[in-house]
Length: 149
Image 1: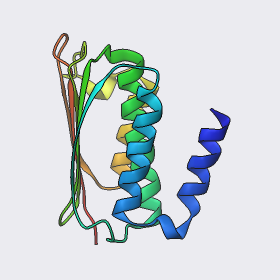
Image 2: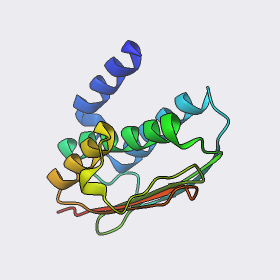
Image 3: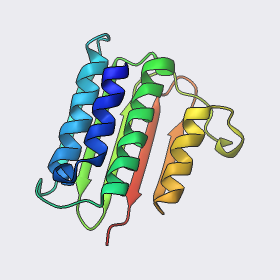
């Protein structure tokens, strides 16, 4: 875990990594590390020019959001299938869904989960629009749109 944290830290401060393609590689690498211990079916949909530059602060925050969502799926969802769409077109669009146990997302503001609150705080800091849809027994769907300048 310490090696992974150090690798993430080095990636987050390396200006050569400030592209959409490198963000995608980091996300895919993290998922590959996670599914090494699990048996998820993963569906990826990737869109956008891999050479597009991304603000380094935004890239770091989005990667932390991505990791937290995947970690929550790992810890809580009991999922078999995870689908991810990462798209860059007039904004960054991230959709992540799973077929896990879900939870009641109708009162998200009062949810006790530290990870979920952290994700929402980071997304608020990025002026992102986001929606979490979930119900018990029906998995979860994250829809995230981050404006870019």
